[in-house]
Amino acid sequence: MDDETRVRINSDQDIVVARQKGRSLAVALGFSSGDATLLATAISELARNIVSYAKTGDIVLKIIHGSANSGISGIQVVARDNGPGIPDVQQALRDGFSTSGSLGLGLPGVMRLVDEFHIASVESQGTTVSIKKWKH
Amino acid sequence: MEVPILKQGDFLIATIQAALTDEDLLHLRTALVQHVVRSRSRGVIVDVTSLDVMDSFASRTLRDLAHMIRLRGAETVIVGIQPEVAFAMVQLGLRLEDVATALDLEEGLAYLNQKFKSSA
Image (cartoon, rainbow over the protein chains, first blue to last red):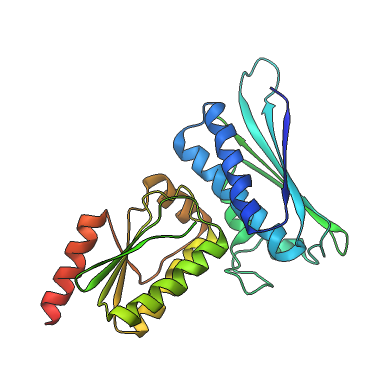
């Protein structure tokens, strides 16, 4: 069950593929329909950022387990690109900020959809966003 | 994936039947606006019952579509947003703003009929 699913993100069609794979995995793991939708929507936004800002990258989906005996499981999604990076991550995490003329709600919105959110970005090297959603 | 557009009296009905790529959504927007012009429609219903994800791009494109159609003097109603999708949209911070929504196709038609009856 620890297999990884990797989705190459090159175009808007891959956004749909990535979120559908995320939903399938969530449903297979027993997520509620609502939580599967939240995860699929988060994946859609992360994949969209890759296409908009970096052109290409990949999204890796993985089933994860909580600490021993807790018995909880969840899904980790890592969105990675080698694009321009985000010069000011703190600014990008504030609602209303965007540099591509989009809604500017991307990352703060994604944070609200998931349980854990981590971002690392280096200018002109790329961005990695890692999110986790646990099965409730 | 092309979205079929049906003409029913003064109204157009577009029923989304599968997941749409960004390109599909933009195509739908253009096709609907052109169809409104061609058939002199007064109302448009976009049925999104089958959409399992409404992300920022989809929301923005549907909102733009409704605004463009309004500039033609016609009204758009988005119908069938699923409860989970509505929840995710609000969490994400997405708004359809002043675009009309209705529970389903029937309610959407009732809304348009009412609107044009009262303005007649």
